[in-house]
Amino acid sequence: MQFIDQATVYVRAGKGGGGCLSFRREKYIPRGGPDGGDGGAGGDVVLVADEALNTLIDFRFQPRYHAGNGEPGSGRNRTGARGEDRLIKVPLGTTVTDASLGEVLGDLSEPGQRLRVAKGGRCGLGNARFKSSVNRAPRRTTPGEVGEERELALQLRLLADVGLLGLPNAGKSTLLARTTAAQPKIADYPFTTLKPSLGVVRVATDASFVMADVPGLIAGAAQGAGLGIQFLRHLSRTRILLHLIDAAPADGSDPVANAMAIESEVAAYSRALAERPIWLVLTKIDLLDAERLDALMSTMNAAFAERRLFYVSALSGAGLPSLTGAVMAALSEWSVLVASDAAVRAREDALAQRILQDATASALAERRCRSPKSAETDAPEAAAVDGLKS
Image (cartoon, rainbow, N blue to C red; front, top):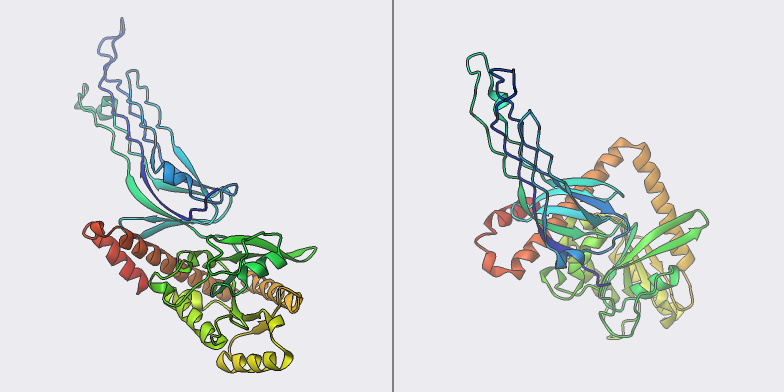
């Protein structure tokens, strides 16, 4: 199945049913009075998180969804049936944004979680509602109201504990394949990875975490170069970022300069995401002798004094137990802190919200670039993006 992580859909809630104009007409009951019933409310459009889904591809083929209209009222004070709600299943991790306003409507991250994105129209009132002591035979009714209409921008952000980032051919897919049961494509040319991949790293019988790999980043990614910037949103939910750095690049480039370039691209995409813990991981160390490895480690420590530094070889397995064990320990410690300390929990929630705003602003800006003809109609959206970034 093709992996699609962005989609635009149009939703329209149901119209409310109109009120009924009716008077009671029965034998032996003179002056029966008004008995027109109310109409039924229009149906809502509701998104439902479904853990069985993992792509937004269905919305490419069916981009329009309508809820049912309410039935009109009838005599004998009978209320019309309510319009049927339209339930739309989306994958876990879907962020929903009003495409015209740039407003984030919700984030569906729990199985079965629901989000009403369009409210059905209110029902019309029958003439029985307008009966009073001075108006015994009202002929007044109200029509049902029109339901809400929205154009929604859906973004899928994978749910993972750890994210891998780095240049193409830095060894991200190889590390994922070596430490998990995932089978990403691995080859000796750049941009082998064309879509995000997930894998579960099992450290012990009762200890595991989810790792996500995205296409490699290159210099200028924040301005649209390469593929990785399109998928950085999938790293926005992670707790730790592992920045993989080729210890012996085939092109002879400097590993330190490569690392700085990638971190600059992450910060350009989202300053909030760059505040997540980022660990540096030197890969392919089997290509270096002990002396060159020690020298590179010293240089990296001097250039990134605030970063934790590891080295691994997916070929020999060197350093992998140390890396995965440290990640598991850090995630466990973080979980305990968040559960026990309200201040830490508040900071994490605020940081997650800022990352969400950056990811949404980036997606909306990318959407405008894809359709330049809509620049005038997207003026409110541009203002919303600027507001999110500020």
